[in-house]
Length: 107
Picture 1: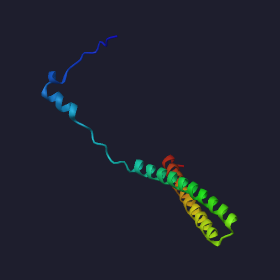
Picture 2 (picture 1 turned 60 degrees about the horizontal axis):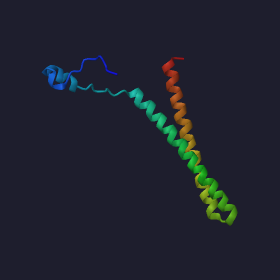
Picture 3 (picture 1 turned 90 degrees about the horizontal axis):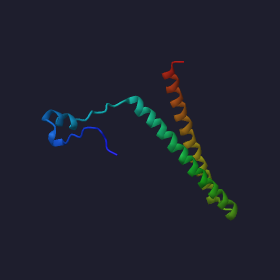
Picture 4 (picture 1 turned 60 degrees about the vertical axis):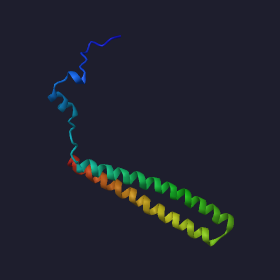
């Protein structure tokens, strides 16, 4: 099947057309997009870190039961603290994102 579009090769174009083909538009910095992406990235990273710290806390809890050692109890408490901090980061980023969307909707 053939296309009915006219094919124009680079050598057939005049000088001005060549310049127009090479010109690129420059994207402007949009602080709104930057803030939205930063909040989204913070929320995703904090949720992932919460999950990994939870797995670590579960493993330390199992080792604490198996060995009856104070070391694993301290490690479990550290992992639970990291979970609390990272989940607080998630809630904070969600709250900031929600407040920006409410302000944008002008409630």
